[in-house]
Image (cartoon, rainbow, N blue to C red; front, side, top):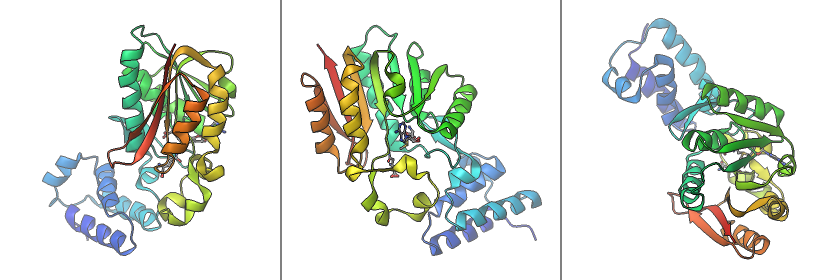
Length: 284
Ligand code: SAM
Ligand code: GLN
């Protein structure tokens, strides 16, 4: 018995809702399986699903019902208008992080009229920040680091697919960057306090790498380390941009203001009105 697209979608969305999972994931899965855009899917919603697509939909929907993020099932997520491969070794890039990249580019445009800047992304995961920066600012020399070799393998594949020339280095935080001086350093480090795990969705908690999510010292560990090591690595005129947890604005602002006394430090809110990014701009 073949189903129409909307019948399968409604059934899967309802089952997801019953399990308190995101019902929107069913549509993303259906778009992927039918290879239709959101608009085409809507136009063709009364079409019958070919048998093999129906079969594939329900096999993969079963993983959705187990709480697996749809992005890991279909193996991709869009970031800044480009498609990135993702798997269980990397964090699924978030829309908030697009705002970090956008804000950094905006600030770089006025800080660095000389466009050949040296940029690093610490803890690159899928490569989303580094690759996007390179695509948007092709003259930049971009380096991406991660402590996870498995993450770097994914990031390298994304760089190849998206034709972005990036240097990749494996290592702990700023260690791999110590041989050069940097104009721009961006990072979305792990920042969730371990005590916050109880409030997190099972979809994130049971599937995304904990080494990408959690940090000690109430989630501030990585910012403390960065505030200590980055002053030796930055050029005179520089921009640092870090994504933060929504409660961490004042603490991270102070860490960077203390580490870079002459700098302008800004805490920027995300589209939900929550503190999400700290920028530290120096130009002596
Ligand atoms: N930059 C990606 C993004 O924004 O989607 C991934 C960010 S994820 C929150 C944090 C990343 O930092 C993970 O890929 C993790 O492997 C990496 N990481 C964790 N500890 C690290 C360390 N000590 N040094 C370098 N990278 C680290
Ligand atoms: N924003 C991510 C989340 O909650 C966390 C990313 C991070 O720790 N850097 O799900």
